Image (cartoon, rainbow, N blue to C red; front, top):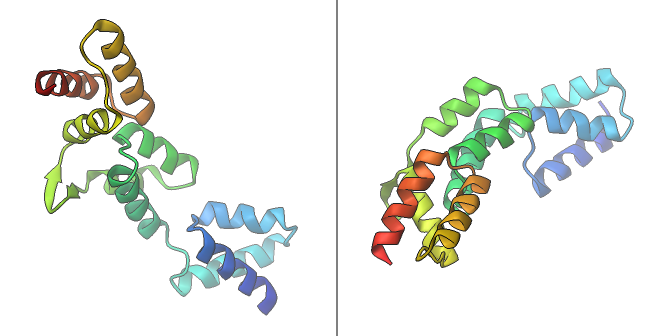
Length: 154
């Protein structure tokens, strides 16, 4: 295995965490031979530089806590990035903890609405809030519940 290729792959992972699929694509984009791609990926997995399980759990936690994403958007993104569905579901099943307390999907949606300063005083504002939460990956039931809670608090 070419040391230079391995060094470049490690540098790529250090800049941006990647899934196995993304690393294979990154190497293929650099016209690396398929056999060499498999050797590099196997080495990275064996040496814990590449780990889809760790990626799924860290990504889920980050997107929940830092971006306020809902379950649907996180799942869709994990699957698109090459994470196995069962692993994505396992990562999503872990409780979200913010400030030392467990946070539900509805709690997080309310937090998103409050952070965005959503105006829930009229139908137009509530529709805009619903659209925001849908784009963030919250299902309709969670979004409606969050809008009701945030509207009462306003």
